[in-house]
Structure formats: C-alpha cells, structure tokens
Image (cartoon, rainbow, N blue to C red):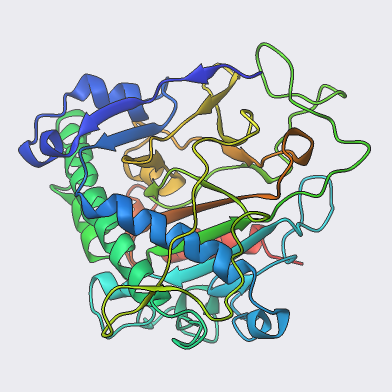
Length: 381
C-alpha cells in the first residue's frame, strides 16, 4: 500500500491568535510540502453538520433519475446543480460512479445572492459556469438539505478566512510588494466560492477486480499504473480548498431512499435523519492521495473532527510560488473488500477570488480570465 503521510495540524485558537509559525505554514503549503493543513478544535457544531450533510449526499444520489435530471445545468457545464456521467476519466471512460452537486457560496457574503453578480467582462451568457444561479431540490424532496449545506459551508469558509490570514502574515514578510491582508480579503469577500458535495456510488464487484493496491512508493494496480480512476490526478484552481473527512456508508444496511423519511429537529426546520457511518472504510486503500514534491504517492487521512485545507493554483500564483498547488486524487472503496454496498461521501469548498481580483500581479491576470481558461481546458464532453 502507499505510505500514510501525517499532515501538519494547527488549532483553531492558534489561527485566531495569529500564532501559527512560519515553519508550520512552509511545512504545510511550501515548495517541499504536501500542500495540506489540518485544523483541529473547530466549532462543536461541525461534527453534527458534517454527519448530516454527508448523509444528504447519499439521500441525494439515490433520488429518482427524473428528479435528478431537473437539477442539472448543462449550459453551466454542470458547475451548478447535479451531475452524473458527465465527466470522463483518464482512460476515456465516462465516470458513472461519482455523483456531484455544485452550489455557489455567494450566500456567505450576501444571503440574497444565488451566484456572483455580472461584471463588464463576465455575464450569464459568456460565463454561465460562474454566473448561473443555484439549483436546489425542493424542500418536500430533501427537507433541510439547503440550510444544512449553507451552514456547513459558512463554518468552513469562516475557518478558511483565518487560514488565509495566517498565509497573509507569511506573505507580507516573505514577498516584496505583497498587498496587506490580500488573501483574507479574497476569501472573506468572494462571491465565486463553490461547494461540491460528492457521492461515490457503491462499486459493483467484478471478476477482474484488481484488489488492493501494491507498491512501496505509489498506488499501483497489477499493470503498475496509478489507481486514480475514481477522481483523476488534478490541481484545484482556487485559493484554499476546505475539505471534510469522507463518510463511508453501507447502503445495503442503511437505505438512503427518501420515502417516508424519519425527521430530526423542530417543526420549523425538519432534517432527514443522518445515516449510520461506518467506523472506517472496509477498503483501507480508499481515500485521498497526494503526489508529493518528490514524486511519491502518499495517502492522507482527515480526522472527522478536523477541517483540511489544500492549496490551489490561484494561491500559488498569488504568492509567487511560495505556496504550491498540490496534485491529488481520490480512490473509492473496492467492492471485493466488502460484503456490503459501500458509498463514500464528502464535501469540498473551493474558496476562490472574485472574477475581477488579480491572481497574477505581474501579468495582471484576473481570476475570471484564469478560471475561464481552466474551464475551457476541462470542458465536459
């Protein structure tokens, strides 16, 4: 199996106090790092919000196809709402094992906003990927889903603002001409931040299942190739990506089908009851993998009560390469290693600059221009 790497961990209080050392930031995000930082001692409500929202991921993924079709936005290249089978993997096959729900997080800045506002350069016609309003399942279909997602995203962005403040302290000292509090301003005022709720559907057993990965320095199958077919190796293109730990659910034991659902909470805000969470994945190789700066593939585990933050390409540009974007991928639970139907659910919150904010201060490239190039390169067939 690929080796397990220990990510740098800091406390929320250290972030609030401004006492995270520059050494810790370099170890977490610098040129020789894994590009990931864990934040512990986060607000107590995080654990419950995570459990509820990741349960909604299974409920959502198991809605009737006719309902899910109404949540798709092809014009926005599926960067709002639901998608399944709209991405291709590195081997050219259509990805039918990963369901995705994107939501704009403009509500963090202004609760009345469903997406960022148009600018002189970008509008809903020429950049629908960022200027299309959210598409939510109605309350009768998934009661409590929207407020749960919004509450958890707000919490993660709140912590992300503090991580950005720590990065600013470092950059203001190490980078000549770096604008004061630039990254904190970007993260706290952005209306382009996006959340992606992911549901990795249970894998069906096959005769040719490759089994667990082998190899001392990487994750390999019987052909010696990297096993990143669930979510191919990539870089995030934002600033800081907030991540929850993955939730593994045995859907053969816990039905995520919404019929006459059990409710929690008061009558003013009913919630679907959270699904039982497996203590661990039955496949120890399932999870998040990072390609280290030395070329080694390592696995990183995120504790349930922590929030992880990964570096993105925009942060690398903003800091002139002092902090590096991290190549990473995800591997799902292999069916051959479980008697049940194991689904994997997780949430990523991509904090990104506003469309007019500069991400390259030498070439004066705005995030809108940068993101348009990335979206064009990754266009869904």
